[in-house]
Each structure stands twice: as structure tokens, then as C-alpha cells.
Image (cartoon, rainbow, N blue to C red; front, top):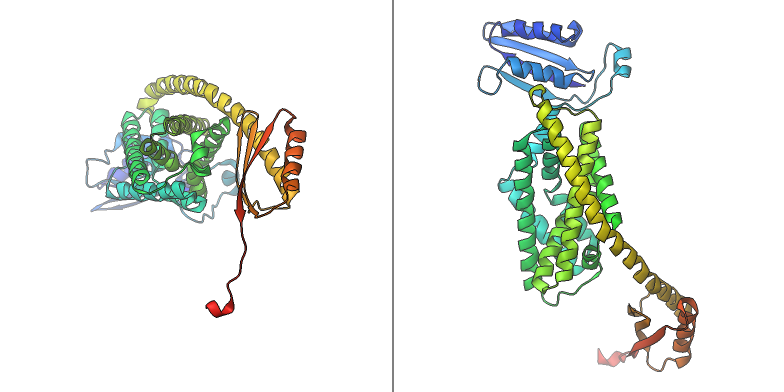
Length: 410
């Protein structure tokens, strides 16, 4: 249920009531309080007619330019309706004005927006460089990325070009800030190496598109259903700030593969998110104002065609990269399993790295000095048994020595 509290000039409330009667609003669902100083009309919107009522009220009365008129829309925490049957028949849907307000408020480039973008980019860049997943997740919560994407998607569905442009400008601002910050962090932090956090964004897969589709759908559904408690989780799943920072870090390292992979992932996620949000908004009944309906329908058709075609084109290299990644990672997983079985090192505490290039397997291991060669031959034998006799196994052994200082040395 949503409540509309509208104020009018004196005697205008009666005209608003006539309008409500023409729209079929029950008399029990509104109350008019008239006075010499102005009229107050309180409307309870429970039955999915919010957008129709608001469209007609805003068309008949100019709330933007007349200071004596105003409109406040809010959702009460608890509703005890008198008509239980109507409550069961109705399905709650946030009104268009509240959704537009959310998109505008979360895609406005101001001091607050820029500050959050900079802080999120710094945290994400350092989290990527340090390979610290909790820090990266923290940056996702802060980053003002989801709001502009919602603004773009909603602008397309409503035929609102101003909202689309606002969303694009906001998202471009975040992108520019994140890339620049990533570039700076990658340049000033010493010994930046390609770790698993960066590698995961260098080589995107089809699964990343599916995550974006699911996150966008969940976010749009939460917004239009009026249940925004899940938005934080959606923001984390859909956050693109680490991907943007990866692009900047890749530029600082001169790594074109990192820049290209992150760019491909970013574009793919943008398209998947916009497509999912548009789809949920459209099929949940979010409609433009009456006078924009024809323009919105044309815009939706054109946008859907373009987004779907580009997404299909992007899915081709992503499918290839997914296949290649699965093929390359499979031998490494097998070698790790063999290592754990042979040395009994379940946590891989002594395993520094595994490299698989073609038919060559390289293991970098910390082992006590004087370790029997038998263990290495055992690993080689088991690896060849699992992968094939044509594989070559090379060991890079780093000997360790254990000693204890005498007590008197303290």
C-alpha cells in the first residue's frame, strides 16, 4: 500500500475528488480536508492503480511550478485494511514516481557520489593488489554503480531520455574515477603481481554474464516489489568497481590481456544487467506516462534488439574463453589432488605454485633439505597416470632447514 498526500489551493480539492471518482477510486480510499488556506487530499493506493492516479493528477494540476501545490508519496510500514478481499486481490507494485526518484537520487553526480566512487575505487584497487577478497567485497558495497544502471534501464522502459543520459553520465564518471585510481595504485604500490583476484577478471566467462543477469533481475524485482532490504546483496553481486579498477591496474602494468579481459567483462556485465532490469520492469507492469507511451515502446524495441545482438556477439569470445579455461584448469586441479595425496598436505602449505604449459607440468615446492627422491618420482608417476604418459613433470624444489636457537641466546 502507498499513501499520497497532495495539497492544493483552496477549492481545488473538490476538482481532484471528481477526478478520483471518474477513475473509479472508492470513497473509502481517500479523504479531503478543506480550509481557506488550502486543501489536503489523502489517497490510499492499494490496488495497483498508483501510476494511473498519479498521471491524471499531475496532468490536471501542475505540482512543479505552483508553490501552493505539493505531493508526497510514502509507503507505510504496517497496513490494517478494512477490506480483506481487496487486499488479497491486489499485488503490491511500487509506483513509477518512487522508482524514478530512486534512480535519480542514486545517479546524481555530486560531492557525495564522487567521494564514494573515489573511496570505493581505492579500496577495490588495494583489495585486488593484495588479493584480499573481504576488502574487495567492502568496495562493492560502497561503490555507487547500481543506481546509474537502474536509471539507464528505467529511462529506456519509460521513454525518459533525460534519465538515460543522467545514468550514462553518472556511470561514465564512476568508470573514469575507477580506472584512474586503479592506474595510480598500480603505479605507486611496489611489486604488483598478477594474483587470483586479478586473474579472475582478466579471463571472464559465460558464468559472469549469468551472474549479472541474475543480479540485475533480483535488483529490479526488489525495487518494483518495494522490498529494498535485498538491494545490498544485489549491489555486491552486480558491483563492477573491481572490474573497472582492474582495467586501470592493467594499464599501469602495460598488460593488454588484463585490460582487454576486464573491458570485455565490464561491457558484458553492463549489457546483461540492463537487459535483466529492463525485462523485470517491463513484465512487472512498469509503464511510462500516457503521453510518452508510444515513444517508450519504440525505444524499448530498438534497445532490446541492440542489446540482445551485442550480448550474443560478446558471448562468442566469452564461450571460447570459458572452454579454454576449463581445459587449462583441469590438469592443474588433477596435479593439486595428486600432490595432496602424495605428501598428505591437505592445505597445500608447502606448495608454492603449479604451472601447466601444454604437456609440461611444473611444481614449485618447499621441502625439508634431504627429502627422498622417491616422493618426487611417486608424484611424477601418479601425474602421468592421471594426465597421460606424454606429460613431462618438472620440480622446482626450495629446500628448508629447521633449527632452534639455544635458550642462552635470548
